[in-house]
Length: 521
Ligand code: SF4
Image 1: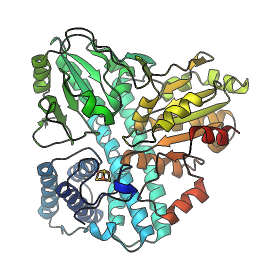
Image 2: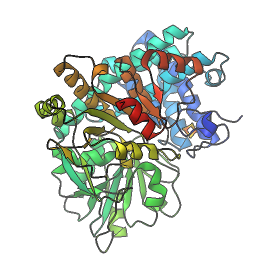
Image 3: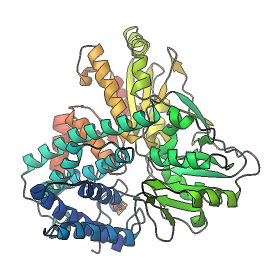
Image 4: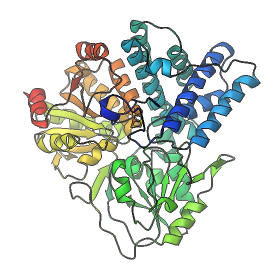
């Protein structure tokens, strides 16, 4: 076995990638990421004794984020990060001896391996959120301290009950991290408002921005002013259209393409430039590699990377490439996966709670019988059409709240309205699970019951590690009866799964019909 990785949903054979990653990650990259993770455990041990600094916080966040699925394929950048961790520790007289991750991946105790992996992957996901919040100047000592605590625990001996407790603590801290990011995004770009977004592309030069980082998009929008270059969102950037301080730019025109797993097909032959601010980057095909740019921790060999210089990014190479390519001569008609050409977003907690009276009234009068939160990450494996079918078959007196890129399975469907509200409400990116939690807690408060007594069911799709930290948050809040798919994580052992089922009634998805019947009776 030359590598081992089982952190995402598409892992080979549902067990683990051992030769090359299904995601395109090579053996050497996987092993360098393991080495980097082992070094982070050394850093965490050191910080636990000597205290954290701004530099150690930035290092731990960037390094964890780098190891998320589809973020970095660039060995040189991973090695450079490892060197930075080493020099940080040695410059302060500490020991760089961390953990050989093989001792975790091949541990004889599968429950300890399972719970430590769950914790590590949750920390990786949470690091992405902490990174985005920090880009807008919001940081939390409590969140940052937990990165060290969690990593140090992965490198230490712990019992199964202790590890379960640490995972619940991670879920609680991630709620605070998502709250921090929500405050950062709404503070800088104001509260999202319902917004219709076209899937068509106007004539002329354009840039497609993908990933999750609102700050990068804002900087780019400032720089395209007066250049004649338009900007389109892609994937998880779609909700950016709803933020008043981003939608004010006339250059922000629409949304290009569908979810991340279709990028190799959808980017091919397109006369525009592409900017990746975070995952999910797939191996870049030579036919369009000349027009793909990366920034932040995203990296791929040979692509042009836009680094920050004195806290600012210069996107002129991206703008220059868009001008050189020239865009389409005429409007290009594009659609979502079901043929629709208008997407609606902007139903975060600010919007939904502003019409809470209307929602509560509709429930009391029986106009709304049930809420479903259908969302999470999309992915390439077959079986994900379950989510399209689930939404299509949901009764007309039910509301679909959605978030993250899983929504591309159905966000171009017109399901009509209930009491003036659309039946599908897009709450935003994956971190906007925070919005869903706020809405659920407010409804529970209004109906004087617990969240588990509400007519609300979470039907989640997972792919990478941000979904892991969100799941930990939901479990830490005691939210039960979650339907999870399309397959269960390979890193969940049978005993850990039993705990998830016994304590929280986590249920693997089956078919849309059977699950709807089971939920609605
Ligand atoms: Fe395999 Fe997923 Fe790891 Fe890539 S990230 S190597 S696909 S488990």
